[in-house]
Image 1 (cartoon, helix red, strand yellow):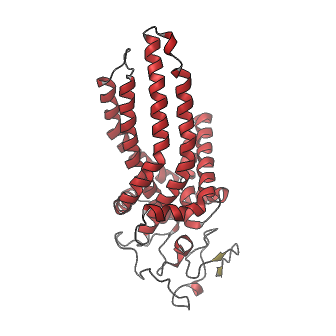
Image 2: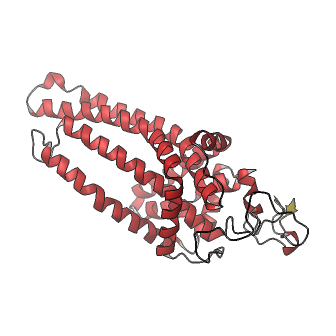
Image 3: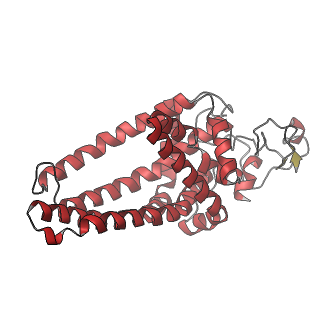
Amino acid sequence: MQPCPACGTPNVPGSVQCARCGAALSAAAQPGYGAQPQQGYSAQPHPGYPGQQPTPGGSLDISSVLSQSFDLWKKTLGTCIVLQAVGSAPAAIFGGIGGYMQMSATEALLQGRTADVSGAFVGPSITFFGAIISLFVVALTHGAIIQTGLSALVGRPVPSVGDAIGAAKTHYLSMLGATFLSMIAAIVGMILCFVPGIIAIVALCLATTVVIAESRGATDALQRSLQVTEGSRMEIFLIFLVVGLAAIAFFAPLMCVTTMVFSGPAPGVVSPIGLVIQQVFSYGFGVVFGSFGPMLVISIYQRRTGFGASTDGAAVANVFG
């Protein structure tokens, strides 16, 4: 193991930079100075990303980041769609049931059937329960999606759903903690003045990727994300904005059409069956879009850290063994 000259953390021989603090490591441990290349990695830059030897800490080009993300997404689509579908299922199922009960109660109230309004109280509780369950499930499936994306990034075979989940299980508690803390930071920021919430989302967006790529704990991963995103947060925000606007442009018309077709007893109120149809559309869209999001974050992480750019691939040995 090669100790970091800055913080003393042991690193895999051949690593370009410290896995903990990001400091550049001595060239003495790079291939050609006695380190043995790790079997299974090419000595060439990863194909598919023209001329890409990412400059750690460098600027982000929106078009190239989106291109790389889309390429990763295509390579991992089968595995990631299944994982995202599993992770999104609890929120979709319980949200659909709770939403149906709530809209049925609203419809009954508008029609004067006050005896049928219990769903107005039970429905939101069921929806909230589904969101809590989803948080625990997503911590595992999201980690598996990141594992899958990192595999594709360094040219390894895309793992099966079972293999990806098996590898992600070792990071489950850290993933759960990083997901929860990032969510709390974003919610608090939104409550305070909206803008701090946006800043928190951008600054902490790499935390879950760091958990898998660098085997860090939750709080350590958040600190590392703050470090890696520093100096490029406006660029990251613009990338997220472009993708978000594209998603809204596709999704919003579907919601408007279903609201008009399945209108309820009052203007602008969708019927209970219409709400279920909207929930199905939301679930399908969320599965597709949710499987692309991690690839986008992985691409940003790689370009900011140089992950996987060492010529023998030893920098990713901690991830894949």
